[in-house]
Length: 180
Image 1 (cartoon, one colour):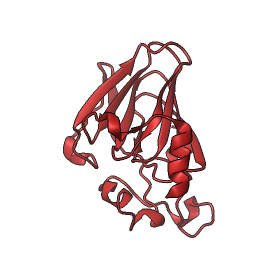
Image 2: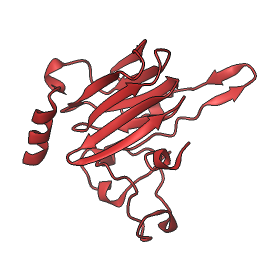
Image 3: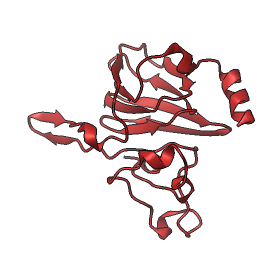
Image 4: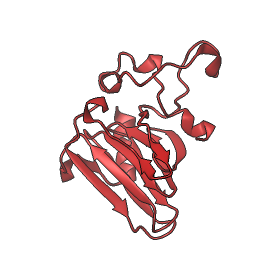
């Protein structure tokens, strides 16, 4: 896993400890960085995009293949909806929206998927490879660029589909962020 992705996974940040939504997403698998692992050396968070966190779902591989168990009690939310995205033409973008209330866990099952995450004015780009994942809280704009039609993305959501929960226009999203 590359270093820039590692900053999104398993990291608790001081600024999130009292956050109404993010603090509820913590689970026993997440850790705090050592002071020497932070930019200023005093334990501040390495996560640069507000609210983006990761999970530590462990995959197992041997000569028989690979297994990624997902134990629902280990997730920071009770999944209400699960879907798979695949057969996306090479370099095409999917997603390109935010949610008012929905938290999503994106898991790359096959291939390489670039993910662009925007929280307010902060932007982070990560590339997910098989079994890497990113947890996206409400009010974070995200888009996924599939590198091949054989790439496969699994998405778990804490809410059922509701068209009213979507922010599909980026200008509207930016206006909402400026007001909050």
